[in-house]
Image 1 (cartoon, rainbow, N blue to C red):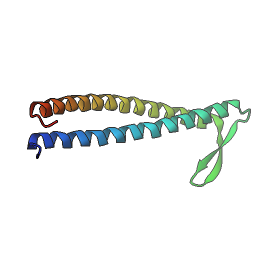
Image 2 (cartoon, rainbow, N blue to C red):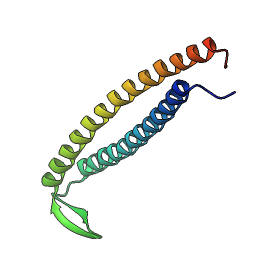
Image 3 (tube, rainbow, N blue to C red):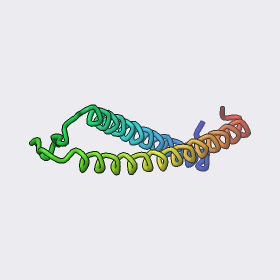
Image 4 (cartoon, one colour):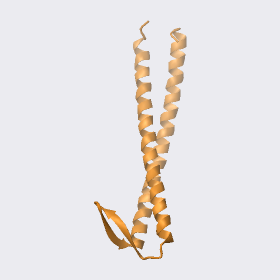
Length: 115
């Protein structure tokens, strides 16, 4: 039995939303890993007595002032944390849309005795 066009369209939307949600979750995981890495770097720099640290720049290590690098890392960390919050909001909205669409699909399928 072939599905009605409106049900096919809803199923397609559902699959697209699932893919978008997976992409958001993946981005969030990558950013969380970057945050952990930066926090670890800041922690290690805090343990160091030296006023200079080395920073990777295009395949080489460059000696830099510790305070400058700490400021740079803290700024990047703040930006990444804001990005995580944005992704979390997107993820919540998308999950709600998925649940709503899933309920709609189930009702449509049950109403048509397709399920």
